[in-house]
Image (tube, rainbow, N blue to C red; front, side):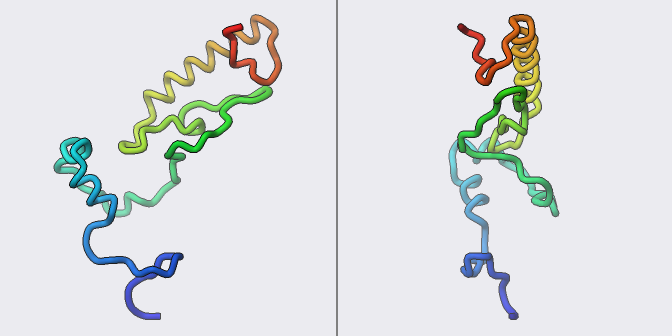
Length: 113
């Protein structure tokens, strides 16, 4: 089929800036932050980071997630290194304390008790 590419929904794409580009250009918080930003060619290729507010379980019996795996990512910048470092430190402290107390049950991350 010739013509414009069709998304999976069957709708045709409109010419002009995408909704994302319009939001960045028009929203007062983003307009200044991304002024002069240029999207790099092929930059939308790669692994999708877990963005959004979907609640995920990030710990269980014998395991816990940190950084990107725990979705600790700024959804607008994609930055997550600082969050990963802090979550890694907190996870290490939590595991260390759990081992010292002999705690090995689900929910052991809640050491406030």
